[in-house]
Amino acid sequence: MLDHRQLDRQDAVLEARLGSLGVDVLDQPHLALEGAVLDLDLLVDAPGHLRAEPLARDHEQPLAGDDAHGLRVDTGQLHDHRQGVGLVRVEAVDVRPEPASGCRKPRHLPEVGEQLLDLLLQPVDVPARHAGANGTPFQALRSAVRRPAHDAAVAVVQPRWSAWSFLVYAGGLTVLGAVGGWLTYLAARSGAAGYAGWTLVVVALLALLATGLHRTAHPVAAGVLAFVAVIAFVAFVSALWTWFGWRSTSATSSSFGGFHLSQLLLELLWLGAALFALRVFRFPLLTAQAVLAGWILVTDLISNGGDWSAVVTLLVGLGYLAVALALDAGPGRPYGFWLHVGAGLLIGGSLLWFWHSGNFEWLLIAAAAVVYVFFSDVAGRSSWAVLGVVGLLLAAIHFALEWTHVRVAFVSGGSGSSRPWVAPFVFTCLGLLLLMLGLALGRRGSARPAVD
Image (cartoon, rainbow, N blue to C red):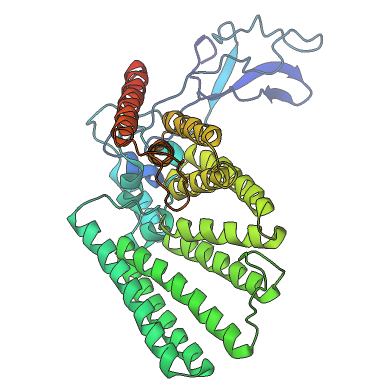
């Protein structure tokens, strides 16, 4: 092979030189950047293409010592084509896997069998970057390899609205009402210690049912019962505090007034239980309890009621919004729904606390409601539009009552003769405003490029 001037890119080269020991072996050429032939750890991509495609070659100088040496044999001008090299022989080297064979071409079956055996011995978690490479949904990729018991612990449960999911939710909420009835019945017929014991039994039964459904691949029913179990756990802790004599009542009119360690500990345990259940069951509805418990805990800890509690509520709402937007950018988007709902309620509630006494303030509420509607399009969350419509309805009710001189709770009317035409006029204007907002959002959506 001394006169052979072309070289396979995956062979090592022996080049004649005047070395002290005779023949020196140069560095091995850089191998072609090729992916594996068949990586069964990523078998979830099977519906699209089984074999990895070879990557582009790296045009780097592959050989060492490509210039003439004073005391060695001049090897000639070396370049990327590997021509002009005097070769002694080719030395076998261990290289990377070969590029993919042609479609439907027979392949080496024993090697595939060994990889299948390795695959059975260890469960595979599919990274998010492989989802959608061949059009396969992310949840389908996970369930294609992992056993159902593993899927329940990894994937976010995203129930679709259907007859069966409605019945599961209705059944879980009915169980929640029944649990409240049982606890009320037991509290009236038991002492403090007995009631604490009964609540513990209820919590244990609900936890066992939720865990059993979770292990038998019924994630929606398990998540609904876990939601009920967290509420029962809060009732159990409250019963314990009553039994121990730790329950304290605030002397102020505000529920956030005073500093009560037992109350703060109860709120902290509620938040911890909700987060623990969320981690285990991956059920987004549990986020609602975490959002509520977190707001109560923070507001109770650093405020004492009144305007300062409204300010803290506004800040907590903005914090929830930041977390929700961060979750929307990744695979945790299903968890962001209740964070968006909580953020909208907290921000809007704090604004209503400050702005509800005059016409100008209700105009500010209406303006904030319009901002909510347009922000729903920016965030991709319809909950903001729903809350914005609620704000517009409240503002319309205020002006209808103000101009018809009717007084009801929370909104005040003016004084003077009644104007029965005002209410239909106000709500006609509101309906037209909602139609225009809907058309505006529709044009914005149609102007965007389609996303697959």
